[in-house]
Image 1 (cartoon, one colour):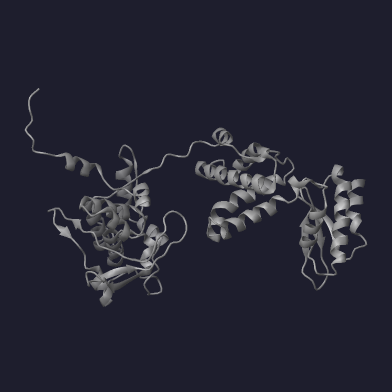
Image 2 (cartoon, rainbow, N blue to C red; image 1 turned 135 degrees about the horizontal axis):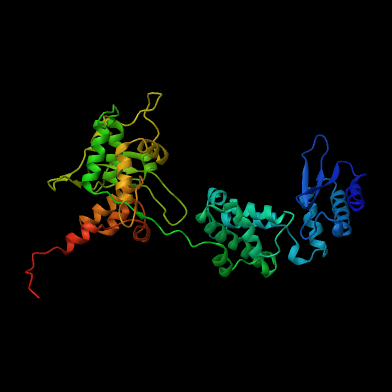
Length: 417
């Protein structure tokens, strides 16, 4: 151990329970005594665990101990450090807090502030990128500006173009917050030029497949009666896809259904209590309206699913415990990828130019297209599907090539030219 480090760690030798350690280049002060919860704090940037910061670090640690001791147990280490920060100019205003502090402040602002998000959204969307940035900032070759920080962080998602786009977005917002709220130097800002240079263009949005009525009917028939040469007939799962097709449900909404009397029609109607809060695609509990399919003779088809549900006779998939299984996106996906008919649909739409993306939501998009085809007003479609007109127009298919060709078909006389 070099002499400067020996002097640094020995500063706490006479203070019971206190110690100094190096954590990824930061000076960490610890307090551990029997019968009390252990505590630790990091001295703020730019103080680092290195020879040139020895004197500054020792001064901070002494002030920290005196403040903590004077409180006679009323202050935690974190509280004592906050008081020292308020009276010290050793690091200047621009470095009064750590990156961890700024990340925590941003989290609280996002969850409790004006533009509220769910805690789960922070954990899923923001935290992975900010945690990686803080890790990089504490590394040996720590970046000194936003450009080099983003460049280093992106290495973790080298083979995931979409994640790189998200990393650029969330880190730019993090650095903007640090500059505007905590006076971090403007060099930490991540600019559009930085992102354009370091991040590949966002992958082109895939065109979603929309099944025609005959494809849906044939697919459901293959499930109910089984595929040739296989004993895999399953009426319960056939009914699941009847429900997804006839009502345009999200798979998760299968868990939230009941049959209620619709106040206008006075008929038994599916009511969905699923409620999605936050983000652009909010969903409120609603009545779900059936949209018929047309058979090979162009006749309307509606399955009596509400009546069967209300009577308790609607057969649904059963789990290994003998009870009706929990239905959601994962269960639907798991079932589909074992079916030859599903793989055939995937191959059929991949062969199109441009390629089209087959997924369970294709049944929901097909409901949307059929509703438009049959002339249902868009406001009514959106009410039944559980989203706004803006979300519908942005995210859902409303027409197919067949519908366009049909709309322009005519028996006009063709003149010679």
